[in-house]
Image 1: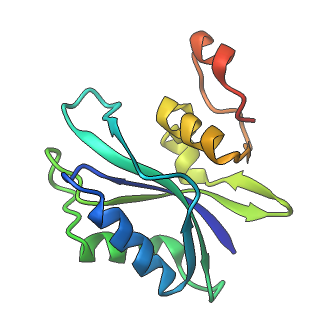
Image 2: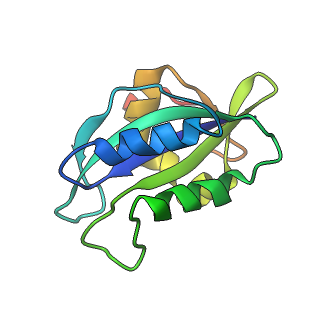
Image 3: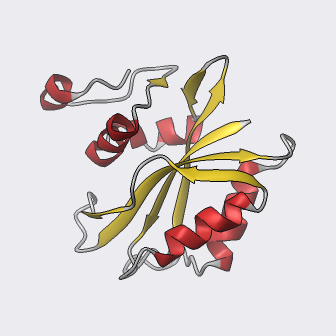
Length: 148
């Protein structure tokens, strides 16, 4: 099973993104779909994040992807009690099934696809997402979005 991931870190360098990708690769194959880029946070905080899209294909389809991601985040210093720093964040955005990327339920619940950052990275990577329900958007977003 192939997974589409959003990687992020508010640290001063992109080192933890690269380490996370390496650790994901230990369980199969992992590769960046976009360059690692620095963006301001879109949550109103003063943080800035290194972000990238990645594709991950675990060797074992029975692997609990979410549990493995949480383990990697913890090993790389993720502390969910802190809001002043995000050492590493790995989000499951979609899985590849029946010839297309299908939005992951948790990503839909978090409105990940409504974020300009995510839409821009998807466009940059040339990735289209199949949604069970359309992502929430604003009228202004409708004009520039070609993510389906």
